[in-house]
Length: 154
Image 1 (cartoon, rainbow, N blue to C red):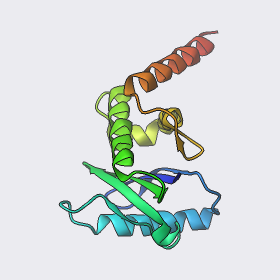
Image 2: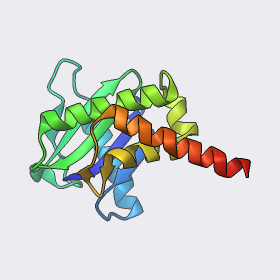
Image 3: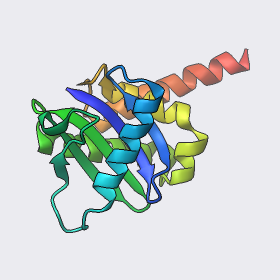
Image 4: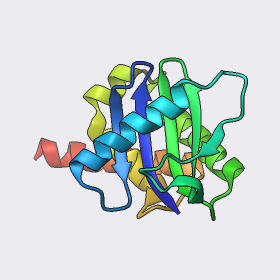
């Protein structure tokens, strides 16, 4: 099960955080800081999986991440999830963002946070993976955008 999805920049500033387990606000901030510290100090040429921090559950959990340009995409998962499956899910998420925003950048995540959450909700719900087909995700997002536009025109 996915426990949290975090996106932060190279300076540790969170750009998206989605927790699928109940944590208080202070604990969430500590988890983000701890996760950034664990992930950012690693070399570029090492494995993209590591043991979860103490706050997210310790050795029973894993941090699976990818570093793209200025952003870290981190999935905090329990031991039942496949590392390679989650790496593929991160790739699909980034490619979907790229398709929806036409060459996504950090500013897109800041100014269109609702759209990013909608894309994520098409892929993951309640910590479980729903959809991994990028074309299906984009089709659903486009349908949602058309509905929003038709509602706004009324």
